[in-house]
Image (cartoon, rainbow, N blue to C red; front, side):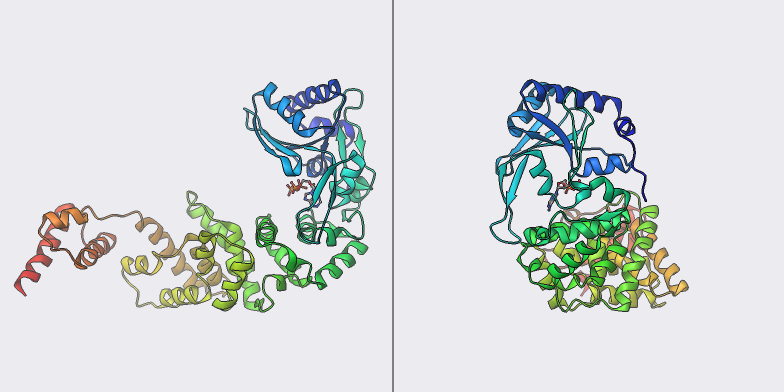
Length: 439
Ligand code: ATP
């Protein structure tokens, strides 16, 4: 059993200035005759003793009017989403706060977004995904710090259990299937028995197919952005959920090994190249798709409605990684410019995948050569030739494809260190021009 923090400790979990802000907002709501609560994951995390940065508030009354008032008073930036009766505020110190109106939701069809109507706080909590996310913490003076926990959220937090609030929950919103796995894996909780059965039942129908591409993408990428996506992917596989990406997605032993090697590859990369930014969920997706055919990958890209940039990265699949590894394993590669040419068109995420793939095959010598190549390549890719096309033109080169060839050769020579100055570059070009005019 988990020990939850006491009410008093919960208040102390928040920095003093946040706490006084919440007290002020509670008083403001009170003046308007409205009740104000902190809700959802924030309360869950505070009760578990975790630090939370952003705040989710809900008003039993008019959330948007209240948000406007707060934004005015505290000079916070404000974005209003009328359809969902929510507003997002960004305070001058960077604090992000969502303010919503307490509401009930109804679903015209499974998988579609709900229509919302104002309702009581109890109904608002009942529409939530899991009991642990359905606890509210009141802010009005006199009630400040009172927990509303009508559905056993604290009990389930103590028992480390994920439990839906009613049997139709996954039908109402199949994204909850992925959210359940996300919280289960993140918090190291387990799915309560009935919830697991309901989840398995929902997963055996075509409910998830009805989710739009962007909604499915959001859930999958959020799962892959978690601290330990390897376990989350294994859980998806165990619950037969990978088939919703594609029923012919190849989750072979080799794929599992590559996926399992990704954290090590990412850690090595971050240590070596701390200034690069890697899209980690995309690396996991690439690893997961690394044995699937190009046609299957193309279908999954469409299913998840990936952006052009994301799609560009993931299409560098098994074939490219295999080809690169084969070439790099070839001890015939000697010049740094050859490594540069081999890797130059690949996104960094693909380089991490190359590394993870090699790490998964336990060949220490090849791996250390690959790491050396990567370190050299990352250094070399900042090198530029001094001369440009304009210089070549001034030197009398006629328009044509030789511009690209000569500039490429100059860059190779710079990378290999056979040319180190602009004068040497000019001499190199002169020589080529001379040879050409002799012909
Ligand atoms: P995280 O720590 O990942 O941000 P969170 O619990 O704060 O988790 P959010 O997606 O920010 O999750 O949602 C905030 C709250 O809104 C949740 O705690 C939950 O009460 C409710 N909620 C979010 N998505 C759903 C959903 N699909 N169905 C029902 N309730 C939801």
